[in-house]
Every structure is written in C-alpha cells, then in structure tokens.
Length: 92
Image (cartoon, rainbow, N blue to C red):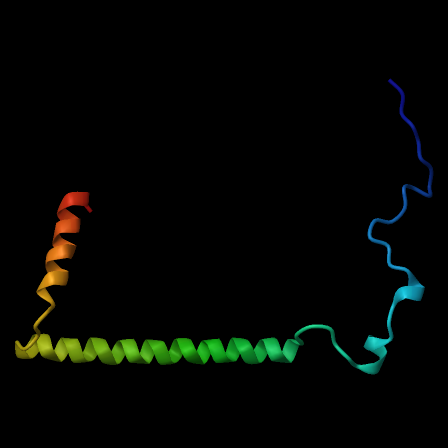
C-alpha cells in the first residue's frame, strides 16, 4: 500500500470564484434576491395572520360555549354520525 502525497497546493479550491467574474452590485448597494428587511416584513405579516386566526378561533369557541350553556347548540347530526362510525370502525 502506498500513500500519494499531493503537496501543499492540494487539488484546488472547490467552487472557486474568479475575481474578474464578480459584478459590482455589492458596491452599488443592489441586492440579489429578497433582502433581510423584506423577510422580516413577511415574518411580521405571517405572525399577524396567525394572531388574527387565533382571535377568530377564540371568538368561535366562545360563541359555541355560550350556545352549549344555553342549551341551544345543535350539531350537524350527519357529521356526528360519520365521526362516530369512523371512531368505531378504526378503533381510535
């Protein structure tokens, strides 16, 4: 068995970028693709959407709770029956 030593130069850098092929977009301030601030805005919008969905869900739960307490809640019997049949057949 022999070991071949390549030397200090190695095989070369993988993914090497040529200095002559670089554009001056970073110097001019242009950014390729979405910037950090636009990603922050998107994250903020999604957080607001989740908050509004949670508020809608809480309002719906409160309304259903009032209906149950008042005795006026009428569930969809077809949905209840299909859910019950699925529960009994699947054993979950």
